[in-house]
Length: 275
Image (cartoon, rainbow, N blue to C red; front, side, top):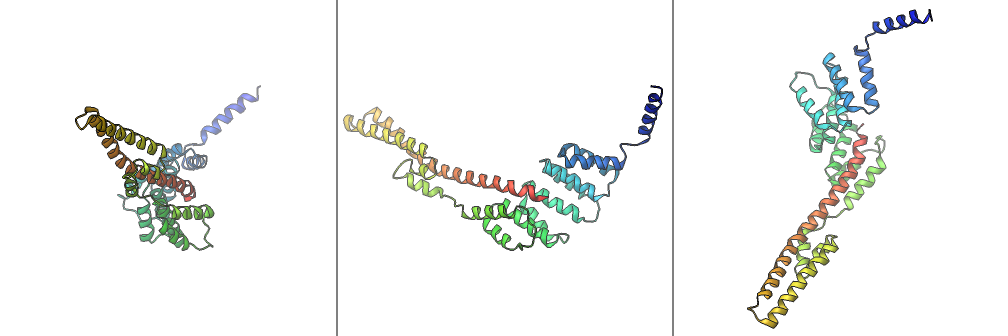
C-alpha cells in the first residue's frame, strides 16, 4: 500500500503533463470518430481542427466527408460556399469531395459540370462523376453511353450492379396518361386498369354504370320531368368526368412511383461507392 500511493500520484502527474487536446491527439480522435461512423461528432471535431489549422486541405476534405456520410450534404455545401469567399488556391482534394457532395445532395447536373470544367480531375474521376450523375438523373440512355466509355481496366466499385441497373432503366417504359384518358371514354374505369389500379377502375365502372342505368330507368318510366332521373344523371356525369381526370392522374402517379423506385435503387448503389 505504501508503494501504491506514490505510484498513483506519479501517474496523475504524467497524465497531466500530456495535452490530450493538442493537434495530434485531436486529429487522431477525429479520424477515429469518422471511421467509427460517428459523423456528427467527427464534424464538430474537424471544425475545431480547421480553426487550429485553417490552411490544411486534408482537414477540410475530411469535414466535408463527415457531412456527406452523416446524411447532411447541405451543411457541407454551405461550408463550401463560405470557403469560396476566401482567396485560396484550388485544391484537387477539395474539388473531388465537393463533386461527391453535389451528387449526394441532389445536384448531379452541377457535379457533371464541375467534372467537365475542372482541370484538377483526372480522366478516371471525370468518367465516374459523369456516369453517377447520369444515373442519379435517371438519364438511362446517356448513362449507357457513359458506361461504354469506361474501360474494363478501370476499377469501378459495384460494376455488375451498375450494369444491371442501367439495363433496367433503359428497359423501363412510361405509360401515356392520354392513352388512359382515351380508354376511359368508352369504358369508364378502363384507364385506371391500364394504370394498374384495377380496383379503382371497377369501382368507377360501377358508380358510372349504376347511376346511368338508374337515370335511364327513371326517364323511361317518369319522363324527362322526373327529379330523381336528373339526380342520377348528374351523378353519372360527375363520376364519368372524374373518371377521365382520375385515369390521367393515375398514370402520372404510376410513372412517378416507378421513377422513385428506380431512383432509390440508384442511390442505394451509387452513394456507397462515392468513397
